[in-house]
Image (cartoon, rainbow, N blue to C red; front, side, top):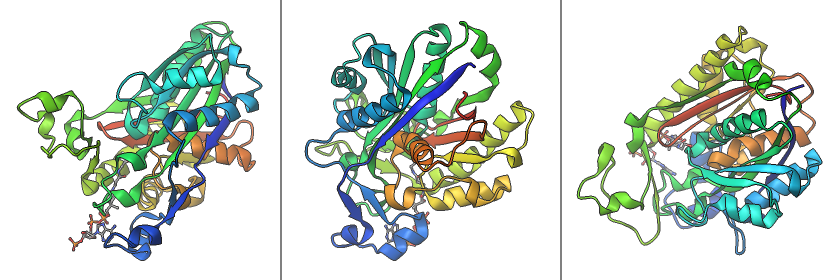
Length: 339
Ligand code: UT7
């Protein structure tokens, strides 16, 4: 009973770029990238693929798994930092049209790599108040299109893809929120805004750079700029704290968790989080060897892979936890598939 994940889906582009492929045009090696990140290859959106098309494909799978028809969907929340248009029309609106979800409201949500958990929480609020409607929550990214391919410290980290879930509720309005209000943490620390930035936007019209964000000559297309060390330290500190705080709120301990779905940014980050939480690494879902960092898509892709691999059974205690540009962080607890 209550709000639950009714179905999951994901999409990874067919085109794969390996570390060796990157090393052909950049001063790097597969050995360096793998030993510093755990990444061997990433999927890259090809001709005809975009944040919207990948999102729609992941959503179709999630709807099929949930047995949901387009007309059942009352809301589409799409988490992305790489919308097809910046910032409008929203990618969510294009996905609404592609899926034929004519009854659905649709909007994009930008909370970087923590975006999926933020989006899940918005959708949870929606289905809590409209229990007869379902919500589609999607994370979709075309990060490889905003990378500076001459910056070996950042371009090796990211990949493209999409993941989606359908949420539904079988409780009366308000009942589920009272039961589950303690299950989510959404947070931010804007003092670290300059750690990960994407060039472009209205700030360029200003004669100063707010929040200490370094000035950079505007490239012809938007580019991601990363201060890797600072992000690494923030990630390790924050992911373990959010997961611990969630357990504390629920009156349980990290040892009781069956699975942790942490944002796939760097294998060394996840290893450090596992050590801090005193949990075996085997409890953490790991797929970044072949997906790299897909930002808002990373948690729903992982979730869908776990579901399709038969790794999640009813009642398993799982935590989804992410962090990203902003800085943002977010975590949510789920007694699978109940949110
Ligand atoms: O979703 C959030 C997005 N961001 C992140 O998750 C980023 C988190 N941070 C990280 O994952 C790591 O900080 C990086 C993977 C980005 C960098 O790893 P690191 O172990 O912190 O390396 P470093 O920046 O300390 O660089 C060490 C050396 C440097 O050379 P020198 O100055 O010691 O001579 C770099 O120039 O490694 C060099 N280096 C590389 N060498 C070969 C940096 N990138 C590369 C590369 N190939 N791709």
